[in-house]
Length: 67
Image 1 (tube, rainbow, N blue to C red):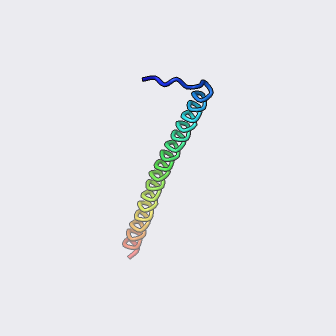
Image 2 (image 1 turned 60 degrees about the vertical axis):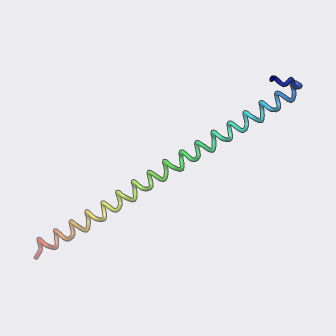
Image 3 (image 1 turned 45 degrees about the vertical axis):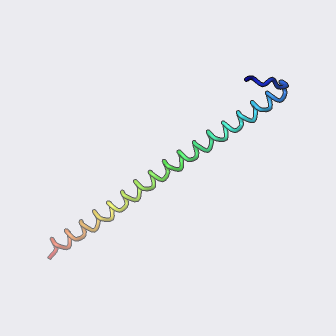
């Protein structure tokens, strides 16, 4: 069943719907960016831990060679 409404009202509803869709798309982009930043942060933390572990290993090897 199709409801007839005044063109002004139909335009207002379409405008509100468009605004809601744009806002939802913006929220989805922000969530996507947040997840990407979280993944990048986790990768950086892992890399830092690997680097610290490698430095400790090198220091132990150097100390072993100097004895």
